[in-house]
Image 1 (cartoon, rainbow, N blue to C red):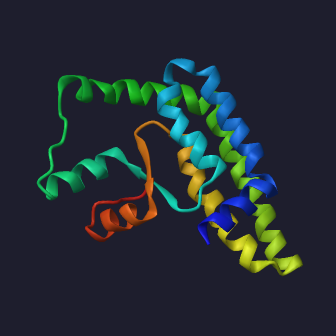
Image 2 (image 1 turned 90 degrees about the vertical axis):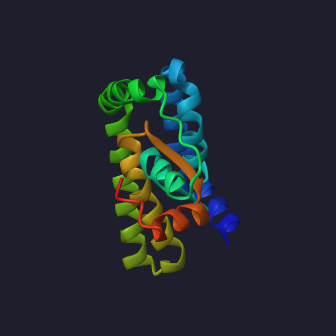
Length: 159
């Protein structure tokens, strides 16, 4: 079902927003390794979920796994903040607006065209991508099963 949702997403316009993310990633080329998972997620969002790195670290810590708290990781918070601010003022607001318009178009499609099985999941995917479009740094894209495991453990807050 995930594969079918991703194929329909890609064919019905996911490729356009994905190209927007790709353009932003190429223009922010020093940060390209951090943005490429987001580009893949924007092309094929079903079966994956964005989770904040702090939630993943808290979950790992509760399981007794090692969490990297080196000075470089602690200093990266300021860099992440500055990168998010720069991203919001260049591409983030455009992509978030594109997701909002596409979600509204899916809502209209649900009401007037009665394509609820296609429109509702796509509308929810656009709403799931909106916060990531605004603040992509500090977010990891993980399989939905892992995100659910972290959420049931009580570590996932809202993006």
